[in-house]
Every structure is written in structure tokens, then in C-alpha cells.
Length: 507
Ligand SMILES: C[S@@+](CC[C@H](N)C(=O)[O-])C[C@H]1O[C@@H](n2cnc3c(N)ncnc32)[C@H](O)[C@@H]1O
Image 1 (cartoon, rainbow, N blue to C red):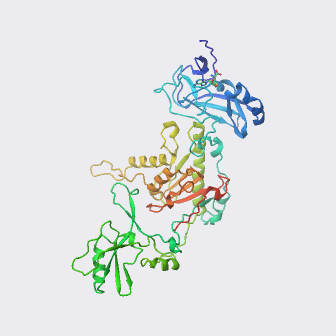
Image 2: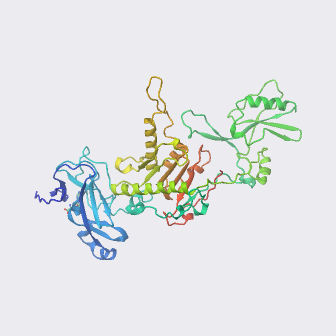
Image 3: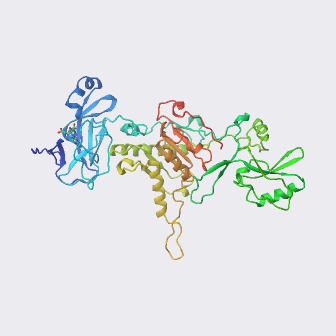
């Protein structure tokens, strides 16, 4: 086999490999994160490339560039072969018209240097670097246009998050001024949780009961059941039965929107509860036999709805409290604006490392630093770890939890330190900033974490769990709600396109 030695600054050489043609090799050990090669590119306009280039051998060597241009890397850049487990990542330096190749892990002398071309190869690949040596790093794929199941996340241009947000006109003025809602650089989603139920057919009947589960706070099985009631023939027994009920286990929160007694003519009926079996009643009171009735599952929000609900069972009127969004001062806006810029800065770095450019950031809280004494940032690592659950939001929750485990609370008597237990993952009172709308899984995790609010820059209509494909904090039956806000100016689509579902929240 012929061996040609061509050295670049990092002493790489080119060698012929069976079944692959030429390849680039390290002549000495290279530490991780070393720039191996910077190749200037030759750019072809889209038209020119379509008419000529793509019908030639050039098509095996070119990279997608911005604005439909195609780029041919000069120097060693065109000679890196493909591997499923590449040891080299690359980033397109659009401003300098070059491609920068960086070692994704420590590389041994005489190891072949490979990049990842993507999933749509035009040749049958041979010889992947051996598993024990291999990095799990998979950089952005050239020419990849296939749907990736993640709203084309893998195709998001590197420059997407590169521009810091300098549009900070809202920051000039007194820092204590409260900013009008329509001047805020973000829009808050309103989560509509309750329908008015003003038609008889709209009344939701039945009570949702949750089976007791000691292990999960959130995902417990629930059933919709009818309520048990019993007629009380003798009026003087009503008071004693109400007293008995208070002490029984039947008096539960889920029935608090219903009145206990229904009077119809001479008959008084007592609402007992929502057990699966008929409740056992006191034997010393003359009562009818318990029976089941469908009862409204929500309080009445309006008089019309009250009138209709009362035909099923007397219901409490609880007019909706007006949604009152939290007021934002200029000082707090500055805090959020800094957080967005921190996200973007990190995102830019992540994109050039070959991971999906998704970053989540939990800054020190604006109001109360006792909730978290330092800020945390994490990016998506599902590519490098080959672990489909390593999303940015989950990674940052984990970082916060890991930090808290090591953060001593108070010393014990014997002088050893005590750590908090079981609640480290909680983001109570904290705000999460994230480049992309969290997916359904992450939105559920965030709900579980009791996060106070989530700001994102880029909506994900097909996979998002904060208004895109679903709106997790607006679901019925979840035990926490968080505020959702979208930072303006990151997406040109109209709001209706992004959020096909209109939600409102009860404060
Ligand atoms: C950008 S060039 C790489 C340099 C090329 N080997 C050469 O000698 O010019 C891409 C071409 O290299 C070959 N190639 C790259 N990676 C390969 C692999 N893992 N297995 C087989 N052929 C590969 C394919 O023919 C592909 O069209």
C-alpha cells in the first residue's frame, strides 16, 4: 500500500487505507480539544454547484455552507474519512471562510482521524475505529436533510444562537420602573385550565380520585367516579350526620366545591364521598340506602354555570380570579437579559463541539439567593453520550441536584456534615432559561421539579411540551403549574403558528 506523508502544523500525515482511499492520521498523540487543522474553503454558489459541481467528484468532498453555498475544504480538510464514532469534530467558521477540525478526545499516535458525515452516506463505510478507543462524539452532519424526529434540531445552523441579544432598549431608564406587559422582551403564555361550562352538555361530571401511592408525587393512577349520597329522612339527624362526616375519612378536598346537603322538597340528601365501595354508615341513625350520583367535577365560575350545575348537585360559586401576571422591573429584566445572553454564548460553543446546540440555564434567583447560591448551565449531551435522555433541561436539573448533595447544610454534633436528602432536584422558586422549548419529557420533569417559570427562545411545535405539541403545565390533574414565556425575536413565525392552542392561567 502506498504511503504518502504530508505534514500539517499538527504533524498529521495522509495514508492510503484499503477500501477508503486516503485518510488523515496523527503522527503523535494529540490531547482532547486540540485544533488539528484549519482549512480554508473554496465556495461555490448554489446555482453553479447545482449545474456543475454536483455532477462531479467534487460532490464527495463538499460541505453545506450558508445561503445554499457549497464549500470545498482545502488543505487536509477534504481528506478526513467518515466514522460512526468519530474522534474529530469540526465547526464551520462562516466569518473566516474556513473549517476548524478539533480532536474530540485524546488521540493516539498513528490513529486515523475521522469525522462524522451524517446518516445518508453515498458509499458503504468500512472500518470504524475500535470501540475502546472511540469517542462517543458525533459532530454535526454535513448535507443532512432527513427528518431527525426532533424538529430538524440536528440541522439547526451553528449561527442560530451565536448572536448575543444586544436589543436591550428596554433597559434604558430607572431600574426600579415596572415595565408594561407589551414592552417586555418576552411574551407569557396564558394557560386556560377551566372552561366556563355554560351549556348543559359542557358540565363535566364525576370526581377524579387518585389511588394512594407512596412512591410517586405525580403519576398516581386516577379514576373518575360518581359520588355516594344518602337520603336523611329525619331532619334532626342532619347535624349529627354532618358531624360524623367531618370525622370520617370521606370528607376529602376533591369534594370541597360541592355542598354537603341537597334539599328537594321534604327530602334532604347528604353527599358522602367517592369511595369505590358504598360507605359504611352509623348504625344508630335512621338513613336510606346509599346510592351513587354524577356530581359536577368543578366549581361554578359563572351564575349560568352555577344554575346548571345545581341541577346535578348544589355547587359552590367560585368566579375566576383575574389572571394577574407578575410585574417586572427593569432591574429584573436585566437579570433575565443577562441569562439569555449566557444561554446564547454557551449555545455557540456547544454548536461548534458537535453536540445538539441546546442549552439550559438556571441562574441564581433574582429575588432570593437562598434558593440557589450559584448559577448552573448545561447543554444537551445525547449525541456524545449516545443516551437519548440526556437533554439539556434534565442535565441542568441534575447539575443543581449534584451541587446540593455536596453542599453541607448544618454540621452534626459529631462535627460531620449533613446533606439535604431527597429534595435536591427541586427548582422551587427558580427560573429555567432554555434555548429550545422543552420537549414533553423535559416539561414533565420540570413540572416535577416545581420550577417557577420557564423561558425559551425557540418554539418546538412538533415536540414541545410547553405549548408546542402539548402544554404539560396546563394538563388537568397535574400537581404543579409553572409560568411559560417565550423570548421575543428568536422566531419569525406568527404567534398563532407557534402556539396553535390558546391557553389562559388562573393566577
Ligand atoms: C471527503 S472524501 C475523504 C477522502 C477520501 N478517502 C480520498 O481518498 O480522497 C470522501 C470519500 O472517502 C471515502 N470514504 C470516507 N469514509 C469512508 C469509510 N468509512 N469507508 C469507506 N470509504 C470512505 C468515500 O469514497 C467518500 O466518497
